[in-house]
Image (tube, rainbow, N blue to C red; front, side):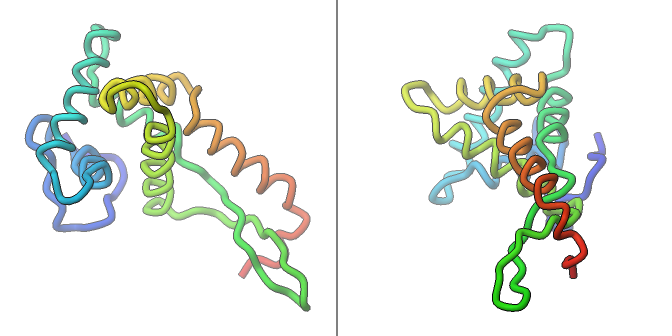
Length: 157
């Protein structure tokens, strides 16, 4: 199963269960202290929970759609012009879109306390799939900030 978007490294191998490079990249970002087997078990457990909640959908497609929904199209970057700092809206490349989406999903999961990580991950994937949740709120805030500062777009470099 080929991914629609490129992943940051060309030598990244697809994950063993689904053959997805995006899943492999997500597992690597989820990994902490080099414990890849723990990250894999958490990720696959989350996808198993998605399969239970949505039996008519393929869980890897739900995951891919969730990451795609969280991708920002535009972001603001700080630019210093004549002694003043401006938040300049700039388009985001596909590699950075993917990185930001993965980062926001993981931040949303790590910010919630009291439940196992696989359950938090499954809930965040389902919420992002439905265009809801903390990661989608972060994306909407970035887009709102870029829209509010579009008067400074002529400073883009």
